[in-house]
Length: 389
Image (cartoon, rainbow, N blue to C red):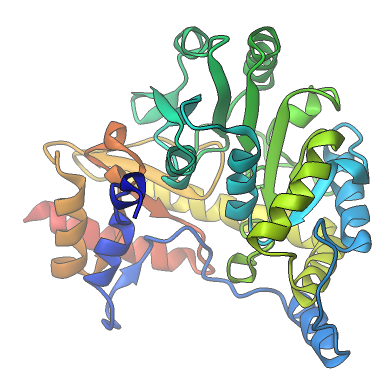
């Protein structure tokens, strides 16, 4: 086995979750998914496809119909994106790994903004890259980017800059002005940007959206030219409630998409047709389903954060994006031990911040994507009792 694989840490979220497996009394908020099931229309589309016998290989880059639908969906949110710039992938994480396989040679430098979902630092490491971490800074519970620090870290020696915004776990979101500065800088240095934007529709502007208003976080696709060294990754998992379906897509320069078809062949060959049919149904329903989900998650976020802010010793800010409250408790330095104690002694399942990097030691991630805001309040009650001991 390659040493870099042996050195990869096991999931600390799974470590905590394993302590609560089989316990019906645990309120689990540790994984990054909603407790809502995929909508019936999406499930029906997959069933219809299977019943029609669509069980064979598909094109490496995805069904033409799905690529066309994605082109329309993405272009309505951002600048026009043609079909030739889109690849369908077997999950968002597969899209991110394909980007690293396409761009990174052993020994290349890759800069990653952290704390972040650990796959984003592990993937370039697996490719043999030298990973350089630039940390967000916490101020009164809110996480901020020191833009000057990031720009100083990205030099002509930097092959790839990896960003995730809206961010898992912090909810931090880039502004369009920050994106423009980063894009201009990477143009000068010749650095590729790999932007994980899977939470772009889980975004909560200060003003509650008007009926019919389309809400989307700032994206590099709002600014970039088609030939820019930019790969933007999307997923059906979060805003379409399809985590288990493993369906994603990426946008890249057309010349890179041609090469990615080969990599998809060597990784998964193609995405199952029935899963792609489900994706088509999800896109068709997006004008209704996505705003409804956004509204529900805004209520969940506001309910949870307001309740947490009443607790002594708890520091938490309202996240502008994603579906997580990121909190820390005064006097608690070991997040993993705290998370284990909360699930074992109090039936409350949260993810330790150290799962997302040492920069988040002492923090806890709470997924607020729940059908029942009351369930979140029950969790806050359990945390309050734990803090009172």
